[in-house]
Image 1: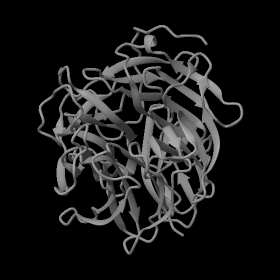
Image 2: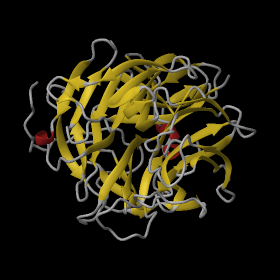
Image 3: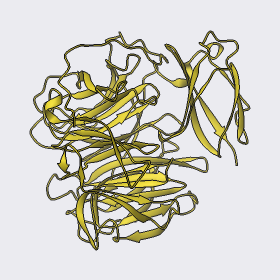
Image 4: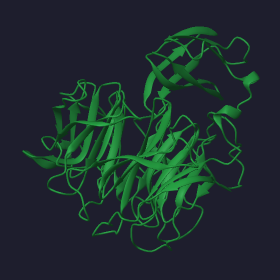
Length: 467
């Protein structure tokens, strides 16, 4: 396997300009809308964290923040930010101070939940389609997961990626893939043991997957991009070994831009920055820049990352939520933040754990290990709805019953237009190029973002497809 040298050349790129000039050095604190926490929840034995990951769902006109704790999975109604309350709690297979970590993802109206501690932990599949009246646990088993660190669902392929996982009759290994085409009856289809050039893989800490292309964070072994379209014959598309990039450490998590031209990854080590990885040439990927939390603390440490609406959202231990403008995706600019914790920087793991920016309202969920769930919103400088409508494309009808027309005849866009359609939780459902200035899309019921990109112009609108 060819190992790429560390690059020192800085390249300048241009991508979607929605609202904020990337040259701006101003940082604005995000606005706090509300917060939920429960002082009766015990902290973990190792980190005294009562809380861990956050996720979100929008169902039947209401929005819910999901946050994991030592007690289980909490569904917090955040529809009215003046009246935030716990609607439901699903106890985990294992509960109590032994629990540090839970993780969540949704697919076809189901929330998938796992935990990484406790011999009795399970994979839980929770039907959320009947909210606000009720939720229902429709699958609860340790067959494939009695301890799993992180999960990701590739909605294109109906596949659930279990990272750093073991089951009742299964050894704890780096990664397994389950077929969830029947959402309540998962089937094991793949087990990762080794990757050419890396040898045996000790851990896949996290994954980001789009249409069988999996971005795998390998902890101390680096980073690799795999193609799992042929599950019996996976292909390596690109890789970074620890010696291939500056400030390498424990490769923890990351997220790609919608066009998969850039990837942002965090090494979970105190004092290391977020890396910006140029993916335009998969035979030679490299780090083009590093970004931080606007301080030089030796204990600053990024944890989880998400890209949405031309912004990179990062939850930092100690430094809370940090938001970066991606007008120039090769060189993000820190434009906003929210401090969820007042704990001073130190050589531990405390503070913000996860972030979820995909709710239809635009409100952002942030979980803090000690402080619970925060609901914040971007400062007034940024909203996809603030794009000048006269300069945007025409999408009609909206809402639609499945067929929508896209009209760019009034815009000065190039003949070739790339169209990306993503769900509100960031999963891409369509990627297609058109050489016409008027074309039609066909989509299943749901809430979407439609993004058009042509040259250095990028425009985004929300779309509703009704049943």
